[in-house]
Length: 361
Ligand code: FES
Image (cartoon, rainbow, N blue to C red; front, side, top):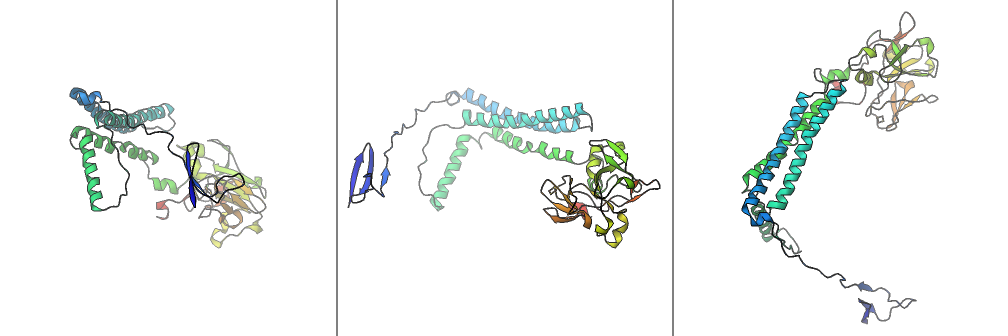
């Protein structure tokens, strides 16, 4: 048997026989009445654009002018990209490039945003309406009601009627992504084939292996006699500092030189002359996504990439023993010249670094 209880403004339905140690009802639902009364809608205030057709026309002009400004900004960004190209090493030019492209894109986005807000605030109908909640199965009357809402929205926003506003907005939205597309061009070299660039490094027959001193600095060439068992050298081509794009070339050509006990090396027949007295050279660029593989675990002969923990076995053709990398590190074939300096036998026989679409072509 249930009874109704009233307590400090709360109403509860409680089972008469059920109370806990404190005397409170057990298993009851407490229903609090609304303490805040619905204040209703404030009185509707008409805007100047509702009262004065001239002001409405002016607001419309502002909106489509803003959308046109956005188009100008987008095109300006494209022109800035073309007329202020990035010249390698010229910081002033890079500053001009980023400044003008940035101004164009800012203008494009800002003008669309302000135009859309002004359109909504000053021109579109702003009367209050209440949308009652109700089940919305997709039956025919619902679809018809939805179509009516669309038509009403179209009528009130003037989307179909105000052709200048609508068309300029469409133009602005179409033009806005264009700078983004043109910026992609900056990722590829201007006058060379990108695939050829990715496939070749500065290493060629007879290039001496020199110490990497960091940045664009090249240290002394390395003699085979300098490399003791267990030691690791970070190596670049001796002529690296003569390259046009030193850092780009270094990013592809950097190598780790390691000496192992020749008895520990597993070398296929056709690669036996790629090492010299247990000295092997492997690309330092991880085949996963290109981080430098720079951690050497001497007793396991494993190279570790710190980015995602791929591990490569130096004693066995730098094969992947752990982690997300899918290919071994490419090996640089080496030998010594007449003065005992370590030199490359050729370039890498496969592209270094992460895979790319045209890698096997
Ligand atoms: S870049 Fe080396 S493991 Fe991901």
